[in-house]
Image 1: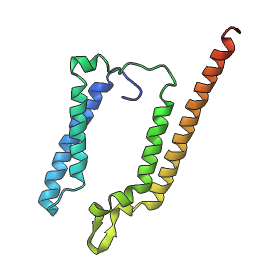
Image 2: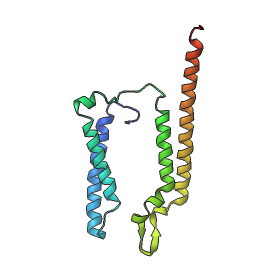
Image 3: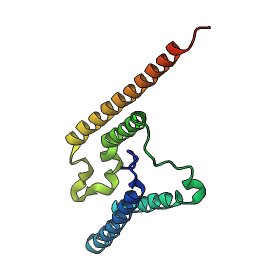
Image 4: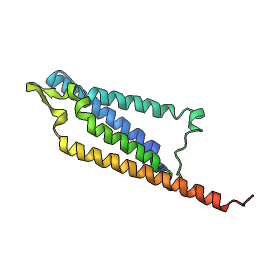
Length: 155
């Protein structure tokens, strides 16, 4: 909703962050009581708290006047979406290695690598889709530039 700049996106984002924090705190408490450790839920919860603080800072009047959550012209988000998809795809490729230290359990089994094939397929899909979105955005920019230069009077 936030990327699509819906009218109530800010409020819905705040609600989602608060619900995520509450669930994260419950998960952390239960994990610590049952198995003595709550990682990696801690990092997820703390990241949600940090994100909530950033979003609350957006409401400072001087900042809020500069933040634009209104409807963007259609087709302006391809490059941002492409970049996000590429980064997400790269994360899908590397997550089993990044999370190995917190997901290796008894017997040396890395549960972060449990879905290697599916994460690889998802990663490739995101990277290729992101590249496609970036190329589409670049083609639109070039087409708009060509239209501007062809419409300008000759000197």
